Amino acid sequence: MKRLSALITLMLSPLFALAVQIEDPEKDFIYSLIKSEGGYEGLAEVKKINIDFNLDGIDDYFFTIPEWSMGRGGDMWLVYLSDGNYYNVDWENRPVFRDDSLYYGHVENIGRQGLLTYFPGSSRDGSLMVIFLDDENVVNVKKIKTISPKESSEDRKLYEDLFSKNNIPLVERLSVDTSPFKSEGPVSKYTGGLNKDDIQIISGSAKTNDDLANK
Image 1 (cartoon, rainbow, N blue to C red):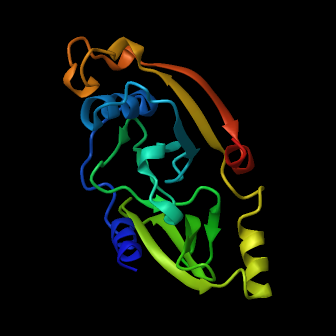
Image 2: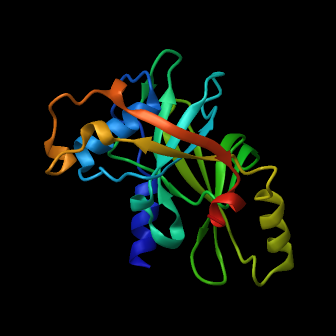
């Protein structure tokens, strides 16, 4: 219960308290991991979701890595939000959600676009949570309701309708070549010559959640 409360508290934090202008979200994400997180010489996989989260006609980006798993609650995701020219990001506040139960579209309960996700509370029930931008482009999280997909046929139908393959955004799996930054010591201590332009995304293909689960 304490872990669940901690995750919900993290999700409720304002996401864009700090604004940094960024041109290339993919390279910036990898660069930031190498510089600040440390030890990512063997970084094998980055998951990415791109959707027009703020409805400005330009894709926004959600990134995560396996090390950011929060167990049954899902993963922590770093969000890059377009302002029309650049991307803004706040490392201090990263929302937590599952990408295997995710709906993006109009959510009647809030009257706007949002990411609706299932946050498991126990083996029998959980909460429908919606992640959305308010009028100030700040990420908010709101609980819609508690459902019991395993015990209620009505809740099971709601779950299946919401999180069908047609509604879940595609998750893209990226492989990254960080070899230019390998050294005898930790990558985080090797700063000489570190340049975002040297980072190579060597593969990336759209995957459904079934594909990822069967990896």
